[in-house]
Every structure is written in C-alpha cells, then in structure tokens.
Image (cartoon, rainbow, N blue to C red):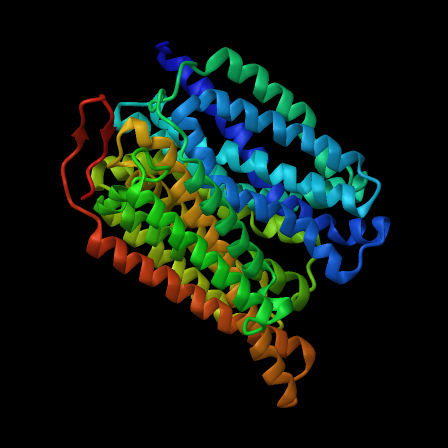
Amino acid sequence: MQLDARRRWYALAVLCLGVLMIVLDSTIVNVALPSIKQDLQFSDASLVWVVNAYLLTFGGFLLLGGRLGDLYGHRRLFLAGIVAFTLASLWCGLSSSQTELVIARAVQGFGGAVVTSVALSLIMMLFHAPADRAKAMGVYGFVCAGGGSVGVLLGGLLTSALDWHWIFLVNIPIGAIVFALCLRLLPGGSGHAAGGKLDVAGAVTVTVGMMLAVYAIVGGNEAGWTSPMTLGLLAVAVVLLGVFLFIESRVREPLMPLSMFKLRNVATANVVGVLWAAAMFAWFFLSALYMQLVLGYGPMQVGLAFLPANLIMAAFSLGLSAKIVMRFGIRGPLAVGLLLAAAGLACFAMAPVDGDFTLHVLPGMVLLGIGAGLAFNPVLLAAMSDVSPADSGLASGLVNTSFMMGGALGLAVLASLAAARTSALQAGGADAVAAINGGYHVAFVIGAACAAAAALIGWSVIRVRNAVTDSHGSGVPAAD
C-alpha cells in the first residue's frame, strides 16, 4: 500500500505520538514517586521496583520485539505494543496495592519495548527519499530526546493538580487515538522476513540475559557493585549472552545475524549510542537533581528549566537537522553535536552551590540542546543505513537496546561515583549541599568525557560515502 506524501507525514505524527507516550512514561513516574510511596505504603527499598520493573522488561524485549516485527509485520507488532502499553497503563492507574502496580509496570515495559523496537523500521518503510527520511528521523529523534523533560513537567502538573493515578490514566485516550489512526494510516502487510522461523533458543537466551543484566545494573548502587548478588547476576548474564552468540553462529535462521556487526556504520553507531546515552542520562537526571537538591527548584521549575533545550531540539528536529545532514552528511554533524553536548556537560560540572539560572544552568542547556539536535538524527541514520529491509526491525531493536543499556549502565555508574565523591567530601568536613554538588561535578565530567569519546569514534570510524539508493529503493544521506 503506497501512501501519498501527506498521509506519510500524518502517519509519522501518529507513530511519534505513540513513541512519545512511551518516552514520557520513563520520566513522568519519577515525579510522582513520593506520592505513590505515601499512598501505597512503599518502603524506600521496594519503591525502586516501580521504576525497575518497567526497565527490566523494556530492556529485555527490545531485540526480540524488533525481530518479531521483521517476521510478522511491523504495523502488527506496533499495534500490539500500543494495546499492551495502554491496557497496562489502565491497570497501573487503577492499582490499589504494591504488587498490582509493580506487575502492571512490568507489562508496560513489555509494551513499550515492542513499540520502540519497530518504530524506526516503520519510519524507514514510510520514507525512501533521503531528504524526507532525514527529516522524519529528526522528528523521531526530537521525540526521543526531548520527551523525557516534557515528562517531568507533565508529571508535576498532573500529580499536583490531580493525583498520581492520572500519570497513567492519561495514556488511555492517547493510546486509543494512536491505535485507531495507525489502523487507518499505516500500511499493513507481512514483515520483510515473513516466512522465516523464530530462533526460539536465541530469543530465550538473549531476553533472559538482557533482563538479568538490567536487573544487576539498576540494583548495583543499592546492593553494591562488588556484592555477590550483583557480580553473580552479571556473570550469569554474560554467560547467557555468550550462549546466545554461540547459538547465532550455528542456527540456520538466527535471531540476530552476527554478520550485522561486520557492517561498519551499524557497529559504530551502536558503540556511539552507548556512550551518547550515558552522557544524555547524565545530563537529564543529574542536572534535574542538581536543580532540585542544590538549587532548591520544584518539579515544575525543573521542567521549565529544560524548556530552552527542548525548543532548540525542536527547531533542529523539525527541519534544521535534515538540511544539515543533507548538506554535510552524517559524520560531521554527529561529531560537532556530541562535542557541543560535552561542552554543555562541562558547564554543569562548574556550576556552584549558589548557582544562577542565567549564568550556570542556561548555557549548559543551550549547548546540550544544540548538541542533541545535531547528533541524534545522524546516530539513528548511521545505525539503519547499511541494513536490508529484512533486518530493519532487528537494527531498530539493536540501536534502541544500545541506548537503553548505555543509559542504564551509565547512569548507575555515574550515580555511584557521584555518591562516593559526596561521601568523601562529607568525611572531609564539607556541608551536605556542597558535598552533593561536588559529587555531581564528578559525574558531569565523566559524562562529558563519554560524549567527547563518542564524537571521536563517530568522526574516525563511520564510513564516508556518497548518498546511496540500494536495490529496495531506500536512500541514505551521505556519511560525509
């Protein structure tokens, strides 16, 4: 089913609305955690599972969700994910016990993983012209990069004006609209790899391995990074992922063809994605904590503080980014964007205890907004540029897994280092707020180093070539 130009852009808007619902959920819940804790009588230790249950299934099912889309149809999987996420949101909103909410959040994570893992494939399927594809990827990148800070603002508004249940219930009408419009606008049909067999052994080992890895990472700070539980879980995860790779090297129709990692741009984009996500999570979560715990901002003020970066990312994503990529290729904008992001994190690394918004917050926000606006589109294009349609869902799931794991591991490690530095400063006689700020400084410096390293790798390794139009008619902007 061929769509005319206008319907393609309408379809993109609906796709992005579905993805935005998923992205918002990753941060909107954080604002409401104190209210959830008080209402359902969570302890500090059990409250983390409101977040971790979601991350566990989300991280575990990204690769499998992408491959299922290749086999059974991307639209079919997208719609199934929307249904699962929306019904789970209703369950969350009506939950009256800790167990109910945690289980519902796990189902939400599964639905979110399925939606996220096939969204890029659907965009690649809708847009073939290089300029249109670059613009569409820019819009998608903005939703992914900017949606989280919108979630902070919306979470504060809903929680203060109504109650925490509404941060979940608001998804019900949105999910219903997305489902109905997707049925009308998205082309159906079988997946590009239709007729193939699902690699069940590979699916089980990689999904369980990823879930155990996420579980170990999100619990590392609390249990201790050198504790027997953390090390044991990581060891089992590594063994399972090793078994997965062995299976993939032997099975006739692998879940993830290992030849994909021989594709230079795909492999490089995933490495860059891990480092970039670590830097992005450092920016979003740690700068929010700096504003709340050091500067004393409320949730609404934190959301508004991110507004300049969001507006800048919107300007790049909704036009500028595509033009820049078509003019300069993938490699240059990627490297420049990541270096600007590193500079923005360096600004936060120098922010004082009595920081002023105009002098110490706004410059970093502006640099990070420009950097994210420039870099996100090229990373996604590089990750999808070398793969055939039959593997597009897998490539989409792979790059999203890289972002997920890079962000989760990066945030856990940076938070651990920040806490260690804070403890050392307090032991040396520093007051509580100065010690917290000193801890954040260390995390911001390391986040900046991750962004700078990603820039260097992207510039050095991504393959330079002219615009490509392959046999299936997809166009990819020049890498340089």
